[in-house]
Image 1 (tube, helix red, strand yellow):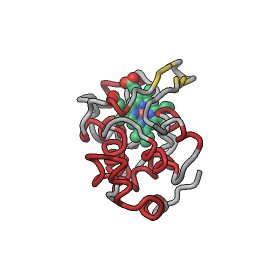
Image 2: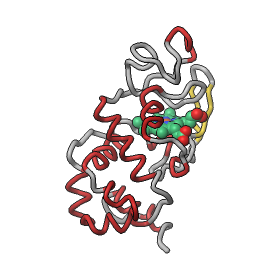
Image 3: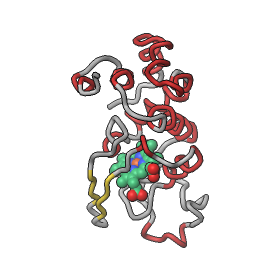
Length: 176
Ligand code: HEC
């Protein structure tokens, strides 16, 4: 899917309005109308393709296998993550050794250490590079999105509609 910068902002704001989004996200309402969060949703969907493993709702219900090293892992539910923003940032940039979570920063492990380890320490166990690396801004934005959209708590019908830009059948199961 093509990267469409600036798409999500007007779409989200226009479709739901700031107050509906606020209602959808409770305490994190402010954050979800934040431009960084809206840009981060676009990075998540259209650049990082994060939903391939983490699913749109962050529940990570897919087991992914990596052929080269035979790794098999399931993405953990981001709605329950214990990580704070700096730890999410490090995970996105560096990936997770021993799992299919790829690194999204080309400089990771080389120009800066990850989890206290450098390239010499990690060797061939360094996580694979993602098909598309992210810029510093894109990492920041996707971290803001994870905190606002997933870490804020359970998935709801209104969040689903915000994600898809309108009511879809996927969202029906969230109707109360
Ligand atoms: C190929 C599958 C895959 C893709 C693509 C992927 N992830 Fe992951 N991700 C994983 C797996 C598997 C884990 C768990 C790693 C482990 O077992 O430690 C993970 C872990 C994480 C964690 C840590 C969660 C926690 O609570 O420990 C974050 C945050 C995360 N991913 C964000 C992202 C973002 C943002 C993107 C897109 C830019 C992305 N992931 C793309 C598979 C993937």
